[in-house]
Length: 200
Image (cartoon, rainbow, N blue to C red; front, side):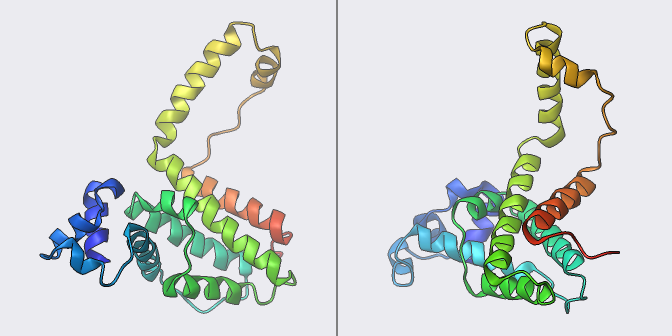
């Protein structure tokens, strides 16, 4: 798993194959098949291994703050491993580290009155929203937004989209810092699924 992580971090996920990982280990691909059925098994191990990078503290009693801390750690881990967000979004895996993460989320939500189904849904959405946010960041982030804004300006000034033109006539709010935007998105998503955050 460590060899596969090293290859993916250096060269991207497409470089990870049974043959390539075996070469990193100084052996043949056939030897890996004694432990793994296929590349998918290797990807699952890689996903779960990154879950060992979290640093968990005892729940504080403020479920929202605790989940925001977990989300910020998830974001940092996915940014460190630029291939990870795509896998989290497309093949959710619960190995030993993933179960530890789930247990931590459920511990943080212990005082919350929501039922277990809602809490599990919140866990899944927390991972999905974080992965989507990181994919956007790594895919161009603000530079892509600027290109979109230039195109939008062109379309609006053409007169072909009057509703958009009226919308954009309103003063734009100041652009939020990406870190604050992430926390705000996660907070609103969790509040929508679980109810309003605790009074603070």
